[in-house]
Every structure is written in structure tokens, then in C-alpha cells.
Amino acid sequence: MRIAYFTHSLASCWNHGNAHFLRGVLRELQALGHQVEAFEPEGAWSLQNLLKDHGEAGLDAYRAAYPELSSTVFKADDDPAELVADADLVIVHEWNEHALVAALGTARKRGARFTLLFHDTHHRAVSEPESMRAYDLSGYDGVLAFGETLAEVYRRWGWGDRVFVWHEAADTRLFHPPAQEGGRQGLVWIGNWGDGERSEELETFLLRPARAAGLPLDIYGVRYPAAALAKLDEHGARFRGWLPNARAPEIYARHLATVHVPRRFYVESLPGIPTIRVFEALACGIPLVCAPWDDSEGLFRPGEDYLVAPTGEAMTRHLADLRDDPDLRQSLVASGLATIRDRHSCAHRAEELLGIVEQLTAPALMKATA
View 1 (cartoon, helix red, strand yellow):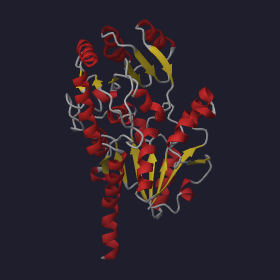
View 2 (cartoon, helix red, strand yellow):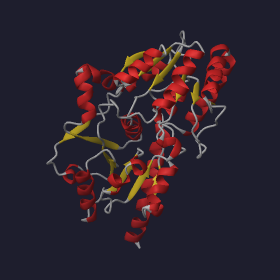
View 3 (tube, rainbow, N blue to C red):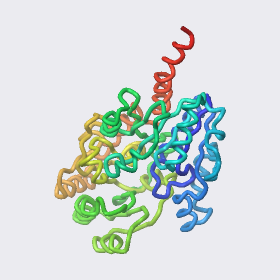
View 4 (cartoon, rainbow, N blue to C red):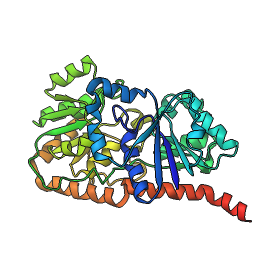
């Protein structure tokens, strides 16, 4: 099968978490024998920011980890339907322009042979619903939503059984425990500061507890304003700047534990959706402690795969326990790894995607042969 994916960027993960999952799932689809091609727009702001801050060297980690992947850059005046005229499956991520989304839908309504899916991996359906409703999806065969609560939004918008839950997952070809354990020290947090939607939570569940537990804290990410950097300095955290996602496994391997602090939208408006960092951390075999979030879909085993801290004080206690109890660390690592390997790899998601396409195309095939 020929599979095309329109992304904001495959090459850049600078403030672009979808690139993590996309790289892994495209590689797994290739391993299954499918032809895959990624398309990204000229001047993608994620890539431009990466190049501005780090130059071409900022792409070295991605290129080394994913030599089999590449992307085609298209211009604003290119006809996207012509780019994928020979495709069997076309997936369009929600970070694309409204005009591109509409043009592909129009081509599908006019008889394009490909199955056309819209892929939503963000909270804008609840935080900016007008923007999301402005996408013309009338020609699309279905929607891929990265969590049940997001899928329910699309069902309310009339998609019924044509919206499918397609969770993110870890690329276990890259994200796995180190081949040989070395020394581990301190705590690490990998994430972007964002737009202030979890500033209070980061102080409550990360900065204060790390200091109270006596664990050195390394922080990697982008979009940290001066006030945020001052807050990190106040709590003794070491800001390390942007980290290419392909290098995250080696960073996890140096640290004793990590923490998940969800954005407020994924606690209040879209509960049950973890960030991809949860999948990746567990796949790397690092003990994880989570600030409050409701695993309403039963993706994991809270208390076994990771610890849950309902308060900042509980987070401090958990971090102190992890600091002092190697058996606890080992138990969490073993449980978390088992869950990822059993249920949450990109290989699992590739198979799930193929099953979704089969569900959508089977009725049409039956009708054509009737």
C-alpha cells in the first residue's frame, strides 16, 4: 500500500511532538512492506526555529536515528492532490493549513482513489473549537483522534462511527533501556514550558519536590521565557535547552527518575490522554512519577507502571522513595516496560491503522463486488 502523510514537519521536533510518533509509525509501516512518504510545507515554523537556534547540525540526531525516512517539501501553490495521486491512504495532521485540508477533501469528493483521514493530536478541539470546526472535513473518510475524550468531541460533531481512537505510542526501535546500565543520578524532565498553562503545576509537582527530595534536576525544552528561567534558577534546576527527541533515550539512561506533568487541558477538558513522553519514558526503562491525571481508558497500571502523586507533598515522598529504594525502581521499570511492549509500541499502532483502513474500505469493496 502507498501511504502519504501530510505533517507540519517530519525533520523537526522543535516544539512539535507529533514528529516523535510519526517517525516511529512510518518506520513500522515501512517494515511491514508499505511505501510511505511524508509531506511537509515549505517554511514550517518548527523547522525554521530549529535551524535558527542550532543550524543544520540540529538535524543530525534525527538523520542518524532514522536514515530510512525523508520528506518532500511542498510549496503553498502546489496541488496536494497531485502530490498523492497514486496513494492508497492519505493522512492529514491537524497542524496543516485549512486550505490544504480542504483541497484534499475536495479531491476525495471528486473521486480520488485514496482513503483520506484527518489526524488530531492536540487539544484545540476544546481550547479553540472555532478554529477546528473551520476545517472542511466533508470529503474525509474518517478521523483519527489520539484519545477517547477527543474522539467523543468528533462524535458530537457528527462523525459517529467514522472517528477512531488512535493513541500515540513509543518507537521501541529507538526508545528502549540502555544495552548496558551505567551510573544514574538525579531527576530529569523533558518538556516545553508552553504558554503558561501548567506553570503552577510545574512548580508544585516538579521544581519544589525535586529540591525537597534532594535530587538534582535537569530540564530540557524550548519556549522558556525569562520568568520561567528565573523560576528554574530559584529552585536550583539546571536548564539544558532544546533536546533532539532522538537523543532522549540516552538522557533518560543517565537519570534516576522522571516526572510527567500534563498540560491543564489534558487534566480538565480531555482527561485520559497522556503525552507521548509517558510512553517514551516507560519504554526507556526509567522510573516515572505522574502529577494527577485520569487514565480513564486503562492504558496503564497506575501504581505499578508508574507512581501517582495527588499533591506536591506526595510527589516529594515518591521521589524520596525512588532515591532510596532500588527494588521499587526496578519494579516500576519492569512493569512499565511490559505494558509498553504488550500494548503501546509504534508497531502496535501501525497494525491498528491498517485495521482502521480495512474497516473503512471493506464496505466499499463489498458494494463493488455485489
